[in-house]
Image (cartoon, rainbow, N blue to C red):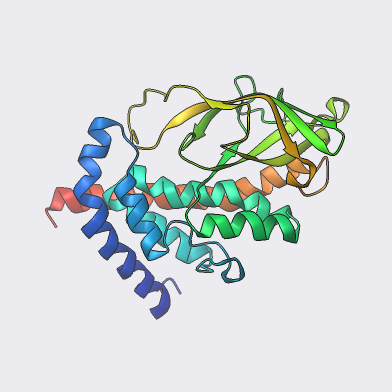
Length: 261
């Protein structure tokens, strides 16, 4: 019942080969210098493992959930920082896959498949475990939306090109007044805080994201207005298993190292 299919076993072996040859040699340096693992990012993109969940119709590998966690697990086995590249690309882009219309899917999933990273902006200084307590606001202005607020603990912030941002569009409706948007790194008014000083996973930057009168086109809303919080929760349901896979990979790597294999 729990044996991998031949296809999934082949995926595991292919990822392990890439990870050991092109990611592991830089892992200690990445952690020591607290720098983004650009070598890993390039190797994963070349092998189509940077965002394997992207459907084939948008230029991705079309990997299922099991294949995606195998990719993350095998990368985490040699470099936990690098494993957050495919993990966060899925986390950031899954709202688009779950609730986006065809136009937004075609635009952003295709660009993700080509190597432009995606991050996920849910948490805020006063909205961590109570994620419905959002303060970031999105206000309509003609056909556009204008976003203001601060997002905290955002993985790969500053490296990713795209950000799924949750913002309040109707403060009277609490969780049902929250909507989701795609914000681009290049949008005027987007900036990033200094990387957090962490005990581990130092090669994956964790920063605040600042939104200062960020004007985006109206078609960058993900799904219907007011559905963002529901989409965010569905996204977390899908992606918690990817972090579990990361933990399994780290544990396996530690065991392999301890055994000298």
